[in-house]
Image (cartoon, helix red, strand yellow):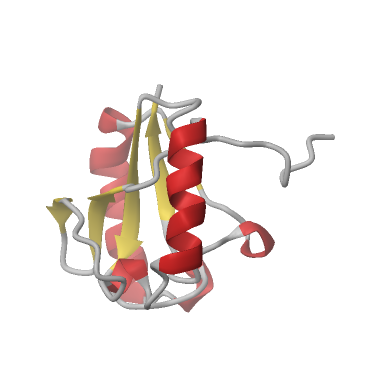
Length: 122
């Protein structure tokens, strides 16, 4: 079994930047744009957006974007019917064409409480 705490999915320099961010820049929810850092928004929908991952999983993937609900929620089961319906449209129409893998960290492993999914390309 892999010890997740020892598994690193970022290059050492990216991991160091992320750890520094967690220790010093954590002023508020990054996905609600409260942490003071600017992020590129690649696609914006009625209830969701796709943004860059400032600290990508670049050890294993060539690209890492993030799918985020606009509304601050903690778990997928907190989504409204409208948010879920749009989520499935996004998955069906966009994600399969642009990305190779979708990753959702489980609650015990998350470092950000705003629900999100990693969109990954090899």
